[in-house]
Length: 316
Ligand code: NAP
View 1: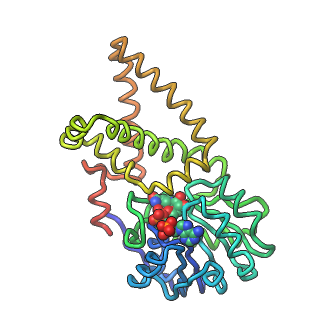
View 2 (view 1 turned 30 degrees about the vertical axis):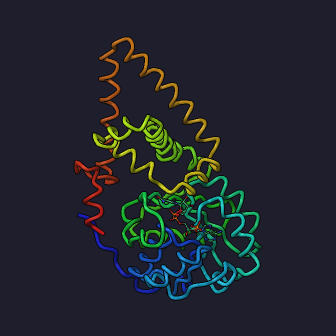
View 3 (view 1 turned 90 degrees about the vertical axis):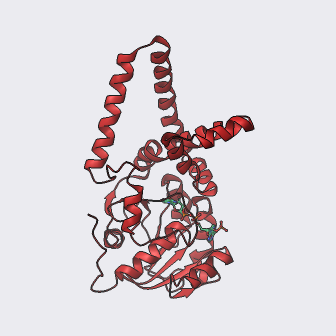
């Protein structure tokens, strides 16, 4: 059974500013409200409708019309917009940041974010990049929920020579939401995530795109008789187009490396099928099944027949 989030005895940060209030920003806001990790949450989004919706949902204590206004009193600023927006946001907020503030993010790629954000921050501000490895295919302020990060990993990629206390505070913040926190280099993060997240999304986009390109009559059959495998791919392929465009543009090298390996393996599979190599196919499918079992055993998924999604939603 999944555990409830427990309230903290006192806030970890007096004021937290969230820049971008989509799935991740709104989930952080819910988790702050549930745990008391922030004394006050200030929200900014460039989309006026999203900001108004965040206010209607009561996601924060203040709603700012500009990035500078949002960060002015913040002890922790979290960039929760697509990674392609980070340079512009950092430029706009840098002059307004408090001395000693911590700036973090939630971007799905880290090397590019470190290169874009780090050099634009003023002296005396601590930078602790983060990636909560948790999400759904939904976007916007209505999509968030407090337990999104529970029992998920949150990877921190602090620059060398950074302030250890700042890293510790960001670690405690994510731990309060039930996340398991790990520290690694941005390059290692990008390589691991390329194969566990980015290439699977690319494959899903390609598979569903191939079906979309079929002529109309066949496409209606594809939708009508969609089997579990296709349906699961459409879930990934329904993910936010802006976010995923930015992921591929900003993790080019690692994705190209993993895509190269993937293509070689696909060619080997093609050969097995052409040659009727049932033993080879069976061996591979046995090895891949063991990976699925290991993921379930480590609590990152349930063995429920619908990939555990229903059970997870029920727990919200
Ligand atoms: P989302 O639901 O699409 O929301 C992003 C919000 O940020 C939108 O309201 C967007 O407004 C706003 N925004 C864009 N540019 C901005 C700017 N310059 N200033 C202020 N707000 C801006 O996105 P999300 O899924 O929460 O993803 C946000 C970040 O989390 C991304 O960096 C992503 O890589 C990372 N992440 C996502 C997932 C996931 O599964 N979704 C998981 C882990 C990490 P517009 O609509 O006007 O663009």
